[in-house]
Structure formats: C-alpha cells, structure tokens
Image (cartoon, rainbow, N blue to C red; front, side, top):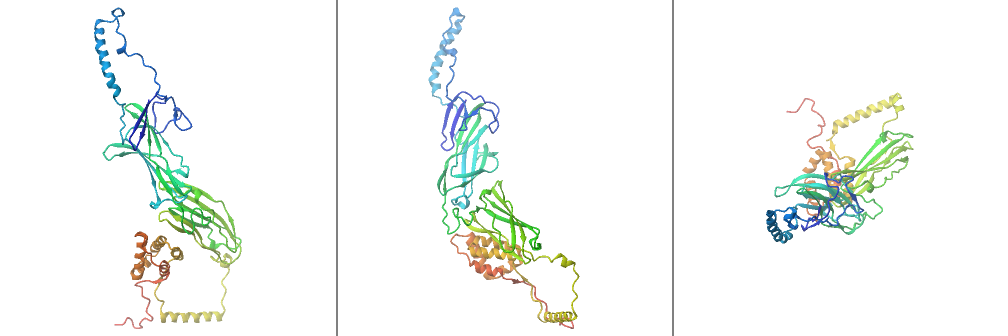
Length: 497
C-alpha cells in the first residue's frame, strides 16, 4: 500500500510505503461501514510503520549449484553473466524515483467565501463557503475533513454534488462541490483553516490514499458602527437577511367579528439567508378593547441551493370586548438588508376589528316606513342634487394609490432609504400603470425619478432627490388623462352645426 500526501498549491508529493490495508476491494465514493477501524481523529487505524517482511533470497544471488547437486554446466556458465549484470544495474535502479503518475494539477481543492455586497460581514450574518474540487484520477473512497470553525456557527446546505467536467485543455475530470453556510459569533480578524479531502484513488491497479488540502482564507468580521440597531443592541432585534416577507391571515375576517366572538390571526415571517433561531420573538399585539390569547410559535429552517430560509409562524386568538370599531396599528419588523447594506423595515399590516357587515338580526327585520314629511324632504333633496349635477357636471374621474403603497413610500422617505423607496415606487407602478404614465409625463417627477435611479444604481456619492416631497407628490390623486367630464347641458335641438 502506498500513501501519498498531496499539496494542491505547491504540487509537492510525499510518499509512504506500508502494508496494504485489509479493507482493499470494492468501494464507493464514501467509505463502507466495517472497513477498518477509525481512531479518535477520524483516520483509519492500521499498521503504517513502513516495516516490510524480509524477502526470500533472490535466485540471482544464490550460490552456483554444483554438478553433484544437480546443476548443469550450462547453468554454471549463465550464472556468472547474470550476476555481473545485476551488480551493474543495482546502483542505477536505486537512483530512479518512485513511480508517481499523479502530476501537479491533477488534484485541486479550493474554498471560496461569497461575501454579501463584497463587504466584510457583521455578527450573525450568513456567508456561504463554496468547496470545489477537480480530480483527474478515478476515485474509490473519499472523506472530507472540515476544520473546527470555532468562532462560527455553520450548517451544510444539501448533499455533496459530484459531476463530470471538462478542463481547459480538453481533458475530462471529476468535480466535487459542497456548500456550507457559516455565521460569525464575534467581530475581529479570523482565518478559515484548510479543508482536507482524503481520496483513495486507483493508480494503475494499485490503491493509493491521497490527501488534498485547500488554502487558509483570511476572514474579517466587521464591527457595527451605526447610530442605532446592530448585533449588540437589545432593541430592535438584529435580523440580517437577503430578503424578508410577511403574510397576514385572519379567520374569520376581523371586520365581521362582533362582541364575544373570536377570530384567529396567523402571521408568517420568512427571512432568506437566516436560520430559524435568528428570527425575532412573537411581536406584541395589544390595544384597547380587545382580549388576545397568544398561541404557540413554530420555527423551521428550509435548506435551498441559494441558502437557508428561516420561517416563523405567530398566532393569536382575538376577541373584541366593546361594540365599537377597534383599530389595530401596524407592527414594524426592522431588518438589515445584506445586499444593499442598509437597515429596512417589514410591516405587519394594520387592520380593524368590527364595523364590517351589519347585524344579521337587523337584516331580517322589515324596513321602517318613512313618514310623509321625511319622504317629501328626501324628494326635494334629490331634485336639488339633480340640478346641481346638471349645472356643474360630475367632473373627471381621479386615480390614487392604495393606502398601503402610500404608507410604504412615506416610511421609506422618513428612513432616508433610496433603495427601499425605489422598490416601493416599482410596486406602485405595477399597481397603477395609468398613474405611472401620468407621472412620467410630468417633467418634475421624471427628473426626480432619474435622480433616484442614479442614487440607487449609479455612483455611491450621487445625491438622492427629496424623498418626503416626492412621496407627497405621488400620494396625491390625479385626474384620468383623456377623460373629459360631461357637458353641463346637452343641446335641446341636437348637436350644434
């Protein structure tokens, strides 16, 4: 058995010879159970001292058989030249290097850290480690030895992936890929120690163990310097993620609930690039006139090729205690956008309890008969309203953004977040395309939109427009273009010439 230790960077190969392991035979890409013992370090135990049993005496070095012992004269004549030839070739054979078909570049292992926004991560921010190996030799067994990662939490995303690949010179090779998500515990300068891949290869019919190692990676973790928030702040909760989404559902609809009845609210919070343990606790939902019963909180982490997705589900049973309409304020969930490196907010939307459909018993009651005086007054009011409509017209129809989109625009403007404002503006354009065309036709708004795009997608020192003023302009209602109001009074004798 020959054991090679391979350095993928320097190309140095060290060789150790020992007795063959008892587990030689058929193998897969992973070690089979029962093939040899492993010590505490994870390596297979065996006799690797390099001791070799003494060989029997070669025939060329044996004494010449005498004719009395059965040797012929011809054998005696051949023994001398062969012995002399062996003596001449022995120094030459001793200087030849050991056979090594594995050349530099045949085996390589690299580890790459994918930093969000090409910036040093903050504490508890996810970073993906991409482990990639390329091997030209056929592989029988393999084992990845991972460093301790003492200053990080980590999780492997999915299974290892093996595939065939083509090298730049056209040769075929085997590719190995593994993705590990790590989360730093503290700020500071750290080093990701080398990963090691122990391979058992078939080298011209002989099993060889080769250890391929990656290079260490410098890994700085940044200290939070913002005025508010951050990993060490108690409030608000530190939530670094690539994206955060919230869904809110009620059963039954809260507007239909009356005094003494109960409705259930379920809020689902999802964060991409985070594990479930990093999601905030259940928000506080408390207001005058309601009784709330908090339900259990469920958490789960979904592993995807793009990274983990954390999901938390919060539940409340809500019972109104007064017959009036009860408003529930929106609940803000602050989070740190790891792509844009800015603080943002997600929102559990505001709702109201009660004030929806009328009482069912009231629906079944017969309508009240109005008195003659009330009927006459109503008829007079209707006649006056008709005259007013004929005299002044109904005017042009107007368009306006929904209340939820207007709130999102104003919230991003108050936070001074151009990227968040740009995302809210895109949602407004999709919601009201007719309004978007009206905005684009106004020179002042078109200029503000261009400045906003330059501040978000252009150079970092480009100034953003006045976001609060732009939010107020976009929140106003606009008349529908090309829809004139009706004429005040139609001609009695038909259209005029």
